[in-house]
Length: 469
Image 1 (cartoon, rainbow, N blue to C red):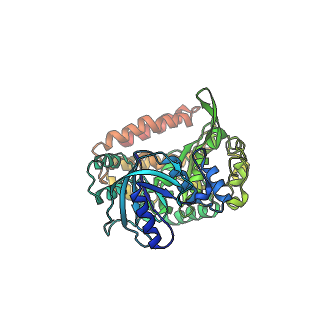
Image 2 (cartoon, rainbow, N blue to C red; image 1 turned 90 degrees about the vertical axis):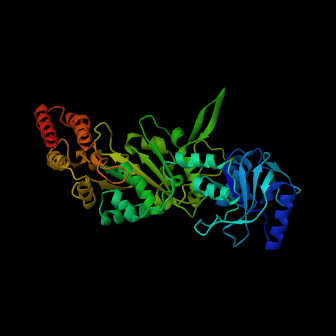
Image 3 (cartoon, rainbow, N blue to C red; image 1 turned 60 degrees about the vertical axis):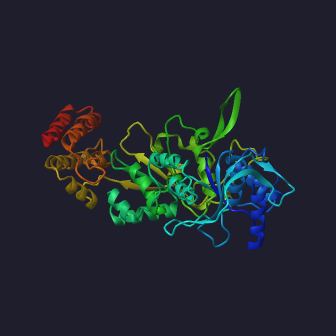
């Protein structure tokens, strides 16, 4: 079951009121852009956009509203009707969708669905609630906002379901600032400014560094900090591997019953989502970006990822697209790509040079000397832990000076960042935790680094073990 917020009517406030009353009396909801025609058999949002543009009605929110109303809304969904212009906190009615999509050319709002009205009474959200979206149709997937709407009419039977959604949400959207980023990600403020500036200018950044420097952790929180909130619906993460292909990433034919059908990949879908919400920033995060064959995965998109090749004017047909059905593809300007690259993996080739010039590279290094980690170390407040960190810092000096290794193989700080509980207090299991880190993570890593020098492995294994007692 989905929840929807929509506007009914157009023109003057009097005309809107009359149209709303007509819909209420006939148990209908409907949206405009009737000239686009019947969408019952249209199979993709791109096709909807093409039809809308042909009639002079194209645009991100128009396409999204038409597609969602005709193809995503379903029988049993809850729909709320919002107030008119300026009434940013007013809800006029609540209903339950009672039919599939129907195109009725005799009506002013030809795209229609039947609805069973449960409430037709104006209600106003509290002063602490956010203003309602101004779009014609909005799909609500934030459980807290759904609960606000349901509570307006004293709906009790669905509140347990909404509460379950709230419990299942790993991270509900909330404010996230530069200060939050600097507290969680152990880089300096000048480094943060440099990183955000790189991403804004280039639109594509790769975070590169040794294992354990917090690349993946930093990537998501960088997106949060730029957006100013934990908006997970504006972030998409994938992981590349040796078998990953264009068909997995962009679009390709996949088995479907007795045959094959054209399936959209995550990058294609996410670009479409960003195009339909041009006022917001979207972040596509690629873990292990150098594990995949870049040319094979990106294909003709290699040019389109460039910062100065974003936008409709550079749109081009895709390998599998049907130009009679699909519009040409482009990457929107509000989409940013953040890749992560492990510099210590000997099995991987360097990243494709054609793609390299399209990305900016930002080095992430162990943060043992950074103010953030020093504060964290003080909060842990454990002498054995302090001794271990001192040994790891000395070990990193040896790794940096090793001709067969270098700075890209240093041991990162994130191995040690789980020693505080949710309240920021030291865990009672610190000693067994750091002992496990040494025994099962650091020593095996040294054995891999110095597979041909057992003496060095034994020396530093003993140093690490002695530090924790």
